[in-house]
Length: 150
Ligand SMILES: CC(C)(COP(=O)(O)OP(=O)(O)OC[C@H]1O[C@@H](n2cnc3c(N)ncnc32)[C@H](O)[C@@H]1OP(=O)(O)O)[C@@H](O)C(=O)NCCC(=O)NCCS
Image 1 (cartoon, rainbow, N blue to C red):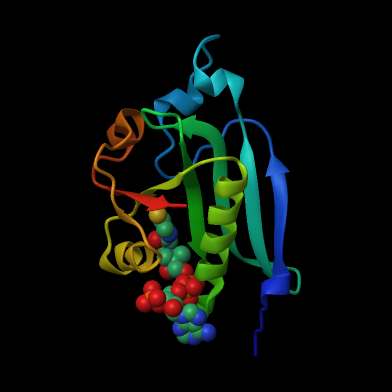
Image 2: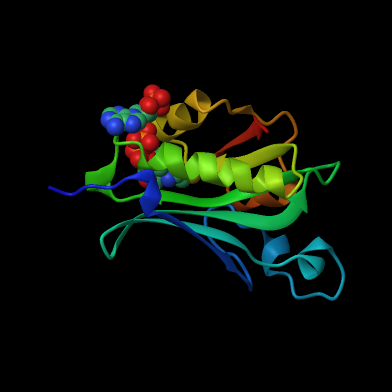
């Protein structure tokens, strides 16, 4: 029987470009100007069952939004057989705390447009982003763009 506990959640800083769901062209832009040049990388969260990675989340370090006060949850994934057991909630809470520590007032989520995933985020306090980030919206126009106040 696989087990996991919140103690199995580890956090690491990563540098370099962040791809992943909703990563905008801005994030891949190598021009010498722009926010992406000033702030690259992010924070990786992994949940492990023994040595196996069973869930992961990535928080971008770049500020987005008109007021530069939002930070994107760049990635969230839980292995199928561990879903519905609190791993996603633990990762989402760790990501929210991380974005809060970085001074953001909201976590930006470009959610896969499936009912389960959108419900997961709505139940965590997210709501529709009134003003989706243009780069992220262009990258994932079918996604549901959400904001979670921190
Ligand atoms: C969306 C996703 C990350 C959720 O991860 P998860 O580990 O299944 O989520 P959790 O188990 O933490 O939470 C799911 C529900 O189970 C409940 N739950 C929490 N602990 C539980 C437990 N021990 N037993 C049963 N249910 C539990 C949660 O309260 C939550 O319900 P709610 O949303 O109605 O409040 C996961 O389904 C996934 O990886 N999906 C595919 C990839 C994806 O869509 N990623 C997001 C891209 S934007």
